[in-house]
Length: 438
Image (tube, rainbow, N blue to C red; front, side, top):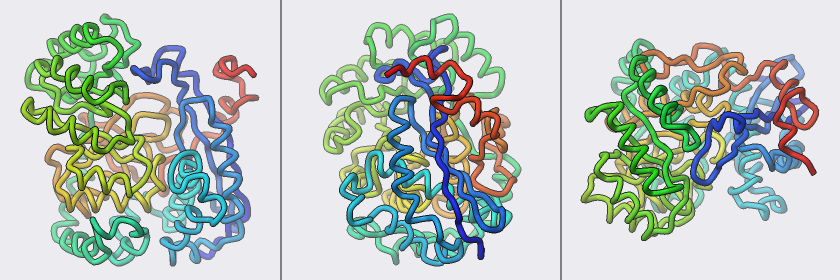
């Protein structure tokens, strides 16, 4: 805890997932899963690792933003940071000049998340605990002290947050034991990317069923008749009793979303994810109201800028499933605020975890949510995609379609140095660089 951060390095790491249409959806047809990858060096040889997720082009911009924040981090003592983590969060997010680039949204906030993720990883490593266990073992007052309540006290006060956490202390040890034995429920997105052929869709769904998966998400939004055909194929393959969700990745206008999803209602999707602009809170509210008679909820949040937008989504009853993201929001600090607000508004959290490193990060937050906040698994599950885990030193472990709690110290986002070297843009020895010519 007395470690002093002596250096911050950041690298642009890109994987050629577009070659096989991994991650493809109606709006992102050629994604190359990528990351701005941060390493913190200390004076005692302890290192912290963090990242923020991107889709390829533009990662170099996030890298520049991380470098712009480095001066606020280098020279700081870890104990100094964590003793006033709320203040440190504000230091990064509210620099009087750089905040103009956000504030607390866009590229500068992605960069803030990468840096803070590395700081949380460093703290967990210093304590010799996986991040979820660090959080679970923290006193409720210490958890609250990490959260910036600015702009959200009309929805959640510091006192209310403390009350939620104190109440959840009852039964905490039993829930922790349950997670260690059973894991946290997951759903798969890997079977139904929009660029996949019908034959591949059917084969992947069949294989997933044999492996114990019961919850499947389908990418939609490019062509209505094609969506009807694909959803019918998948529903017939997975059967009537398993769960299907659909995801449009912001493709439609409000009225179009309602009409389109109404046509897909026969396939009984649990939710429609990102039906319209991720910034359109009232549009989501309109869609939610229109689809309620079909029993279809609205899920969103992977591109929700910050806790303030989540506050308004919750206040407007504009979503029925909250999808936090470990890199879109300001790291653990801001995600804690959203978890607590979601609990107060009685809306289940089903995090976004599709992307390089997001599953590794997100597992820690869902474990904390169940053990210390929500105390419920009703309508709750975390996304899983079976991509790129082999590049991480502590990859996720899935058993019986559940995330098993990680045991290694840290936030699980350290990559193998060989993977970073091979996939670093633009000089790494990989094919993705061929997609980025000036």
